[in-house]
Image (tube, rainbow, N blue to C red; front, side, top):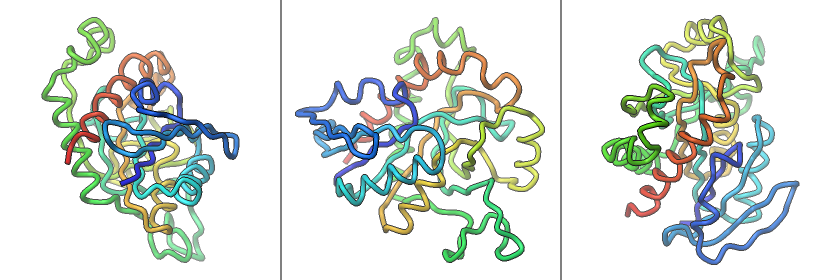
Length: 250
């Protein structure tokens, strides 16, 4: 396995580069790729930046230039379901571009010439990621982020969810937006801005992939409040701990 690890923001990969053995960096396409051994796995870490085009470009370069064999996208997302709360973890089983609509030429959400609207993640890779997330949850939030941080964000316990994640080139920050998306996609658990683009690239290139998201907000009018503080103090240690467990799982 040569694992490509993508995140949109630097804070979402905090600690990973420092944990690498023998890291070396290469600039390409205005991005810094760092390759090395990550807990005995050959890995390449990179920040895609925000949005579907940025994420798709990054994923394609990882495969074509760095010859990764598997891709994982880790970061934050907004909740799109009442049972998915801040601090919970969602491992995608499929992803859809909620802002893609080529109708009436093609059905809404369907990506032309693929025949697909939902892109399924790799079963084995996603199960391995979900297992790492379960171990993280069982270990206890206080041990990873500390009781003060948990109390500040009112995080009693994290729960793991698996299902549909939707991506679009817009920050979902209004209740009405979530209501519309949920009505159109009843199985929807979370919304973000990159995962489905990576999913399409991986599908077309035949690369197994997984997407894991920490829920940072309820995708409502309070979504932007303390967003970066949450990413730094909660999502970042979540991702580091889970990826460490993921890489060490055979």
